[in-house]
Image (cartoon, rainbow over all chains, first blue to last red; front, side, top):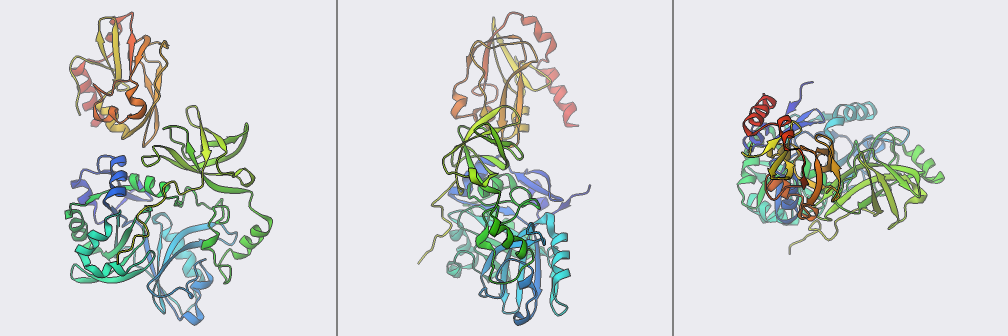
Length: 365
Length: 129
């Protein structure tokens, strides 16, 4: 299989990144040390190449919105220049993808989706949009760089000026940058203060190098990104979110707007009434071992679930993970036994996030 | 990749440094590089007896859990307890501070089944092709 390269590929090679396939793309896993990159993001700022993710633009009359009836996000109720996390679901309530919707204008939205699902998502959304709605996939033309860490605002001020301060968590705007006007949102996948920068593909290398020229900023790969998102209690499509689970089982009810229609709503209303059998929760391992994807979870000698993803957390200084277990077994502080590939290890049921009091909501006067 | 003279190497990338009837063992610079950041080293019990190329213990990195094989037969007489809280020593200093266990050995001629530094360098060059 041929893997695609992002426009930043040559830069990663120059930085001696370890490259590996991810969702059909050659992506940087680390530039030397996953753990060091994770720690750096928690104390300073890291830049991540996120060009593999997909971006769609939907334009339609909000009074006849068909997008509103497709995804779980309250797209018509959202204010312009804000973004919301949500889902594109199958009729049975399981996620095709998780996504973030940006309301660009009264009649225009951007949808940011996972790399592995771009084609599925585009097909499913287009199938269900009204004839009047306009759909455009701008993934190819768009470079996305995430800038994350407690000092990210300092770096952004140097880049676009003090106006960056006005952005609150999950707000965005366009800013003057490298001779153009580009979208920057105060969002991210690390649990820290941070920004996601969307810029035209031809400016990608210039932006990347400009960010890295700041002494506060270092590059970080997908390895660190995985630890950071897990510490922050954020799910990953393919691990915590698959077509075998529902957002209710994943504890994501607040991202479902039941006051309006969306695909999968009936199935989820039914599940809401009957209750969920399994639930997503977290685990902290007693010690430094790492729970891994598909490890079975036992409580009182009974198999009652499985690990969806796990990492060694530099912040907790222990192994941490997400797991689905029988809903009646989700009791904070209770002990579980995780069957690792080699041996087994005790863990304590812990509701994520595993890291609290981060810089994520930081505001400057 | 650093390959240290005076050490013997297994094809599984463990090293052994023999000093009389004692031998320190660890993993090579190549191995730590391939594994990535080491997050956990399962230190073997003192007194454990292992045969050459049998599993001595396990190690975990940010990427995976792996076995460590005994490069030489012997009885564990010391372990590097510094690795309990600082397994990254295996990354930082694979041949010195990152040693894993010390064995009492009875048959130093088993090094015939291992590679010296020169042979290991050639072996690594073959892997990189």
